[in-house]
Image 1: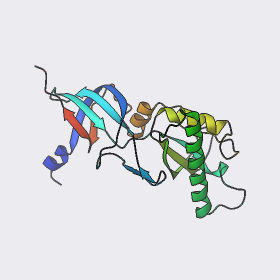
Image 2 (image 1 turned 120 degrees about the horizontal axis):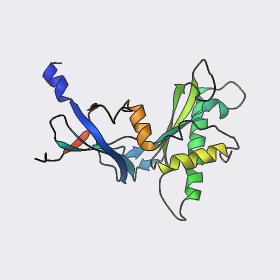
Image 3 (image 1 turned 90 degrees about the horizontal axis):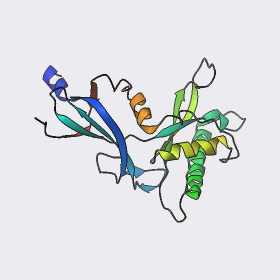
Length: 206
């Protein structure tokens, strides 16, 4: 790839302000289908970044496909016997299903709002205490950022599957979680290179 092609795929912006809003998903840009929900997605979060380019153009970036999440240790979900891949899948699906039902019960009566997008298995080290090796965690993705803290309270209270589960990274706000996971934590001081994002360039103010 030539240098001109490489540079054209990079957009740099100094972040001045960042927030998010909920909106219906846009085909080809957002996550529009959930295999866990068994159908289309109703609403997704979109992160909005206000800033300026090195050339001085005022910029508003709309960042898609970023979902809030938390982690739960898989070992705390599994039976005492040696786990199998089938048991892993069954446990993660059961957790997601139970969590979805519990969050619906805590919501407004008759609400059809979706909460859990799905679960995936990842390897990581436990955050609390010293741990020399990685283990499997269930990474649970949500649609609404406020559902993360609600889900964490349910996990800690033992309200799901009769098990007390220690949530991880549930204390990190959605925007900060996104910045950390995409290595943008120095956003207040540095120019960030953002790849393959939808952007709206506002006319430069003279």
